[in-house]
Length: 242
Image (tube, rainbow, N blue to C red; front, top):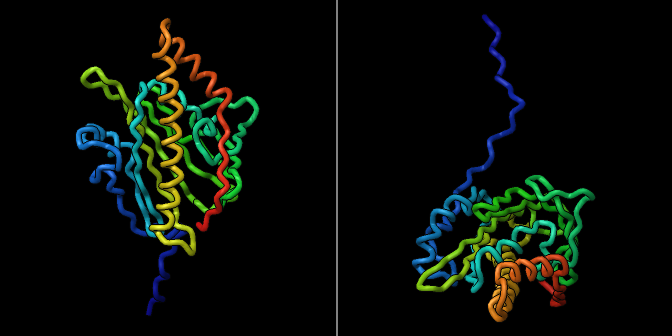
C-alpha cells in the first residue's frame, strides 16, 4: 500500500480578512450642497475610496472655503509644514536635504493634552495638477495605527463667485478598548478643526489680496509664502478621554 501523500505546504500567509469598500460617494458630507456633491462624486470615487477591513473605520469630511483653490492648495501641499493650519501639531521636522516627493517622510510632535506625542508620516501622493495629496502614518507614540489620509482641493466658479471645497478622508485601525463610534468621533473632530483653521487662514489671505489695489496674484503668492514660512502656533490644553 502506497504511503499517503503529504499535505501541501506553503510559506504564503493566510489571506487577509474580508474587507469592504468605503461608501463615501453615497452620502453628502456635512456642509456641501447636492450640486457640489454631484460634481465631486468622480473625485470621491477615485481618491477617497478605501478597503475597510474588520477593526477599521473610515470617514470623509468637507470644508467650503471662500478663497481661490490656488491659495488653498499652496498651503495644503506643504507636506513639510502641516502646522501651518493643523491645530494639534507643535512642530514638524524633516531630514537634511529634504525634497517634497512621494516617499519622503516627516516627524511630527503633537501638543500636550492629546493621546499622542509623536508621529512619523510618509508622503503617498502629491499631484499639483489635480491638487491631491495624502500620507500614511508609519509609527510614533499615538493610538491611531495604520492611519492613512487623502486630501483633495476643488475650485468652483459660478455666477461670478469663486470658492473652494476641500475634501479630506481617512481610514484607521480602531484602538483596542475603543468603539468604532469613539474612534471616528475623535478623528473627525481633529480633521474638522484643521479644515476650519485652513478656511480661516486662506479666507483671510483672500480678503487681504482683494482689499488693496495692485498686482493681486503676486500679493496673494507673497502672503502665502510668508504664512508657510512663519506658521501660527495654536495650543490645545483640554484633556481627551479617547
